[in-house]
Length: 457
Image: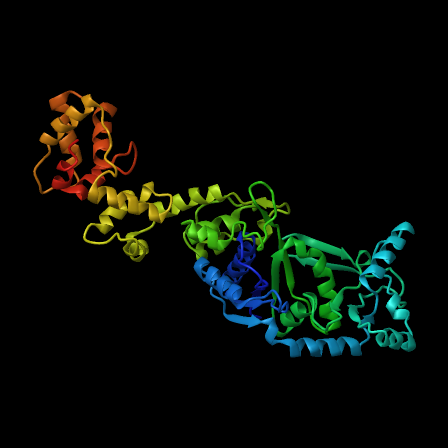
């Protein structure tokens, strides 16, 4: 059996880091087991679903390194859902209900006063054919509920089965169906709620593992019952903990908090996002992993905590810095070229500055400094100005190699008596305009003798 997973967002907004966590968990699980990844858009909400959002989700996934084996849209699969509804009706487990929202709310309040759980009491099962016809004559259209299974033969009893499964993240799980109302699968207008299309798709697409957020644990109890009512064996389930903002707030596509688009536009590397999204809230140390295959080797669903995990964007910068520090020139050549960094010295430049970058685009500022000097020119103290001028008079002739900085500063030290910070800092300020940065031994050959002399204060 081929492991097959799916990522099934609704295309009603741009995905955020929490959605990406679910997508990555599924992708890494498929990688680890040489399986398949199905991208499915739950777009039965035709009013809110947009193709532009589906396209942006695919773009975000590709940026992260996720390339689905199959892409499906629920809006193109209504015939399958209609057939499932007919099957459930024929077997007597999908029944029509005519209550208004106000009537349902009143019944819940009555059940609470009687000390009963505020679940649907299955009153619609007691309706006669004449009563149903009367409701429809009055203009009411039914919504359709799925009859959850019972231990006992009487469907009006509230004692129902406990549903058990072994969760690949959380271990042994149980949902008590007695605490739940029979779920509505079809609305009055004939449109489908999430549950039925999801289960039908998982059956027909031969999904073997469903890995999603732990806000779906209760749904899983209902869905397992629905799988069995449709004559199918349920897949293996795994429910990972959710991510929150650093302040503990929930994430939402509507607010755009920590969207993948915003992180990308902010110059964060995809593997920084993937590393933190997958490893935070697990027993693994959060480190910058260079590629998804290596991350798959570290990935273990069972190592995930049951508590929500805070996603702090500041940690992304730390991971970003670590990734850039180890990136080869070949990995960034094309991206640097787009930024205007190219030519004979581009590789040497990258090797010199990569350890001082938070984001790749930070390289542009260093490229400009090396080619044009500090912008604007830095004011240097009078006593240092004289020192820098004296040092430039001692600048070695070309050609220069990797030892030019060492040779030059040795001559300057001997001639001026300066050493340590008093020697190096004025030269760094004159050359770069900054008090810190890449090793000057690496930068000086890139500036060249003429460029260095041009920085005389």
